[in-house]
Figure 1 (tube, rainbow, N blue to C red):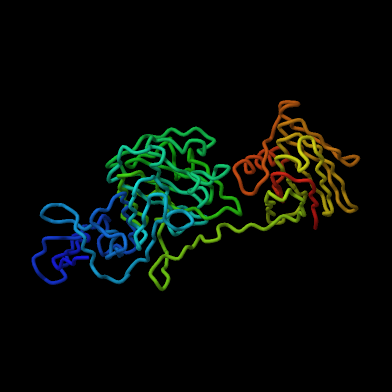
Figure 2: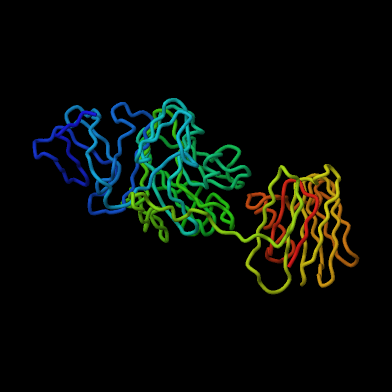
Length: 448
């Protein structure tokens, strides 16, 4: 690649000319912070880069990403200054789960993305578990692309890759039409605004309470209030959920500037910190993913027999005192509609058992000596029944029977399971002790 000795770096008003000659070409930073603002991680996402070779590396020079611009013509030049990584660590963007493909090429620094043809979602290289975080996205150029593919927000890797997760609740993504992603949006009404060239979108993610707030040019959408925690987009923050990562979706011709570090255009909400605050780098200068592994979850004390094609998942809450609440969920019996599912209780102590299925199921519950099962709560969409031990109270919520339904869930974590547990906790006035489930099951044993 041809070198231009007249390149200079302008960062926060400071010009640098490598050879001391009168500069005609300069590198224009797209960050707002100068060299005195460490940690700025502004990023340029470009769909077409006719002048910058994708194999080149663009390092932060005390501020953020840089564009190469001809000072006389305003056209982009292909000079990239040779500079080692220094200052803040490098927080990059790439396809979820790594790699490139489907019409995208990602440069070595991971911040500059070129679209050859298709639209794609991109994920930051560092995620967060818990805490309250803020970042901004400036819409430099928004082409007349596919509106549902032009997204700004946050999500788990699966939530970003699938734009919401297989069961929803694993991302909050605002598209350029001003709505949440169709089919994977919030279960609550959301009233947003369309965004376009020149707009600044703020994202405030409360990963403690599971709420995400969006602003457009400093005004919070949906009448949301990050400080009070009201009218935000709900996301799942249960144990077992992956970390949440910043995410953008681009369509051909789009240009976005992502600021994760500070010196924001609009005021950061009180109690929130810049998403990239406090990150440290590895020996190569890349930010270490502090959220890797997500939120840990202990398995439930349950042995299960599920159909081979389906995964068994479970969760055990920290043990407390008093009566326990254990939830077992399936979508259907392994043997099909109306099949029998055995649930055996070996665990000692006082407890309530909640059983849920979508397809008609015949639950048979047995208890071992020392187990004190007081009541069973059944939630099923299709007609289901429970064969319970003598003296155990059964409360049935069967939609196609009595019109009552507490919801259903068969995997941990998921939005359906989260809603089910909230309803069961309200019904029983107990806190969850464990959940276990699979899509198709035949036997569950609750142990000590």
